[in-house]
Amino acid sequence: MRIVLAGGGTTGHISPLLATAEALSDLAPDVELTCVGTPAGLETTLVPQAGRTLRLIDPVPLPRRLSADLLAVPVRLGRATAQAGRILAETRAEVVVGFGGYAALPVCLAARRARLPLVIHEANAVPGLANRIAARFAARTCVTFDGTGLPRPVRTGMPVRRAVATLDRAAGRGEARRRLGLDEAATVLLVSGGSQGARSLNAAVIDALPGLDGLGISVLHVTGQRNFAEPVALPELHWTKYRRVAYVDRMEEAYAAADLMLARAGSGTVNETAIVGLPAIFVPLPHGNGEQAKNAAGLIAAGAGVLVPDAELTAERLVAAVGKLMAPGQLAAMSAAARAAVPRDAAMAVARYVLEAGGQPCH
Image 1: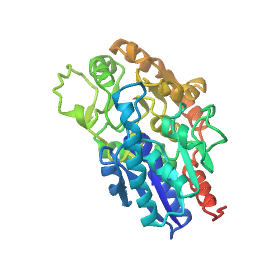
Image 2: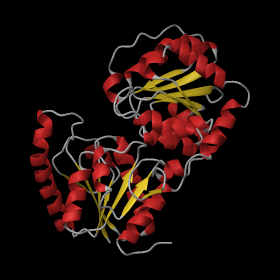
Image 3: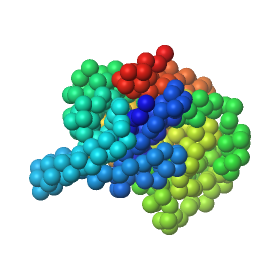
């Protein structure tokens, strides 16, 4: 079977695409997969790194407000849809899968024009515009969260890579800490603002280091590439092992090393931390359409995470939140609640729906 997978921009779209591609290859080893993205997204790096074929079309940003850019959308969308149509024809695609982002809508529209079966996956609790349009004519709409408002949804959860879905944090902890230069006996706080980094998280954790030092916490601080070169004045510390890196290639290794995470609440992070049973303090992105707070809501309600608004993230608030979670048994209880909150086999579930849409039932 020949399948085209479209999506890109950020890891929130690319990671489930690559996880689904991995599952498709496992279920149908002879499947031919082509990924479609744009030159402006992280897919230009991440997709080839994963060993997948990548084709590019022009990006079509969809402005949220009335503006001059909105007037240009029909022309841009028409051009990109024509480009996508040529890719579908050249690859002789039999099924199309859309994951949202700038590349997804043109490919989904081209699939409809070519009368190809379409499966979409929505990562967030609040759907993006591309998937809100594509869901109207999709053969199957897979969602990560209930209550998205999309028509005829089936909740599969968030597709994640096999290395994450099968991670045993306890078994891998010692080796992960050795590789990352962390104290094997310490309590480790992992800090990451996602693929782009988060300045407010970065600033808060630096200011909080003396307080974290007092709690005996080691810190693995993933700043994001664009923030790593910024000068940082570290406070004097007595004990805390502080490790600052721009990026972690194998995020499952960072999850294994950590006891607790401070993070944004992108769908990928919310679901990956839950799947591996890593308790988290979530600080949702303060702008956009509010999807990050809604992404984390289920874990917060289940007692698997703590939410701190971005405007309230001070060093004092962070130290107090971490200190409260150090109570005996608290992290273990949160870990168990997290693992019970989300599906672990979403990549396989989505892959099966894709194969079924193409007429190849898979059990």
